[in-house]
Image (tube, rainbow, N blue to C red; front, side):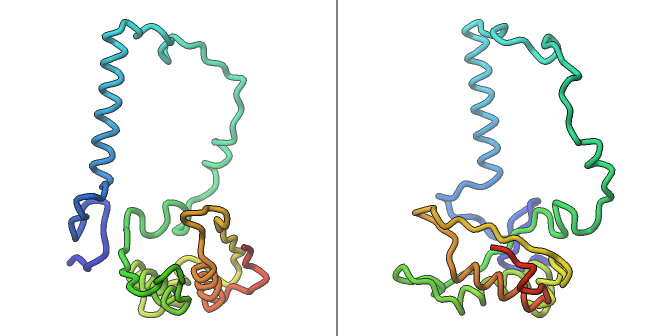
Length: 174
C-alpha cells in the first residue's frame, strides 16, 4: 500500500505538476541531447577527432585507493543508506511566510518527514535510524547563497533532533 506523499524511484504516488521536471523526463532529454550531439559529430566527420578509449594509451602510473575502500565492510548505514530511492514530500504550509521562517513549524515539518520516511512513531526514534550517541556529526550549511541559503531555523531543528537522539553537543559541528 502506497502512503500519500512518499515516492519510490520505481513509481510516484502522485503525478508532479506539469511544469516540474521529473527524473524520467530529465534522463530522456539528456539521452536525446547526447544522441543528437553524437549524430552531428558523425555527420561533420569528426568521429576521429579524439581517439576512442581502445585507441588511447592507458597508463598504470595512476594510483588510487579504490581497492582499499572496497575492503571496508559494508554496514546497514553505508551509502546509499537504509532508504535508497525513497522521497518524502512534506507540505510546509506556513513554515515560511513573508520572508520569515517559523522555527517551530520548520522543526515540525522536519520531524514529520523523518517519521514518514522511517516509519517510526517519534522523531527521536526516526533520528536514531541515522545517528547514535557515539557519532560525530558535521552539518554543512550554505550561508552565502543569496537565493537559497540554509536557514538558521532548519539548522537549529537538525541540531535539536540530533541532541534528542542522544548525540552530545560536543559531537555536533556546524
